[in-house]
Length: 149
Length: 149
DNA sequence: AGAATCTCTATAGAAGAAGTAGACAAAGAA
DNA sequence: TTCTTTGTCTACTTCTTCTATAGAGATTCT
Image (cartoon, rainbow over all chains, first blue to last red):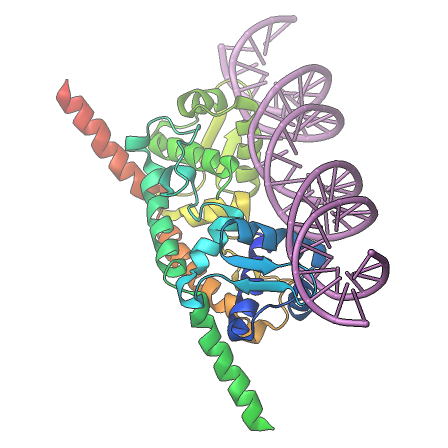
């Protein structure tokens, strides 16, 4: 299970990706649009800023914007920034590797190999899906909606 | 991340699977062999008993044994029994489906479809791997070890 | 009766999740 | 300058879950 925080982060970034050409976006706008508790979102955006995914400007006319191109920010990395490893056990994580304390012998651990397959399958999906991939779908939806009017 | 409890449960069941023909096995034996805190293991085995995976006998010469064939107990189900859904978000779980409260419109949720793919990939692996599949590997390892003597 | 086992109830400390409050700092506008 | 708008920082809270542990109780065999 991924945390609400990670989901909020994804939603906020997707919102920023959609408005990418519009310049700075207010925290309160994102919070209202995506129904994220405002103060909680502030904390999340600070995390994402530390991770250099977004940048901000203070004061009047301030706000947040993406640092990188939405086509270069993968969902996998966003989740990692907030929740840590995608792997189901530490001992098969690439970026957050740690020996499991309950593991007697990693080399022959029967569970490890299986979990490695789960990790690989998960990463294969999440690390090859980028924010921009969503925006395409959304753009299409917005277009369709416009056509209906 | 799966919990230690789920890993302990898997290890305990794998141990029981290996000894499947030997009859009842003591909690303390499993705990010692797999380095699981004894009292914690007791609680886990009670859970597994409620789920009808293992059965027990009290008193002298008592102990635990598997109820079903190791070829019919999947890793996916064991993890579900202890940790709940394998899915990364509630709204894509088959057995534990629940609407996510932070989801505005499930039908068009951009994150949901992606997470569904993760769920499917994970379940595909864990629901088609059974306790017996491990035992084969272990049997081979034990055999190799015996040959070395 | 006594020893060996599983069983049940209760408790507890640590960590993490999810969120809130309020003072503070910076930037622009009047 | 001073006011307003915005993001920043620190601290706290509340709830839940994880990871156990303690000890009395029930059952079975010898």
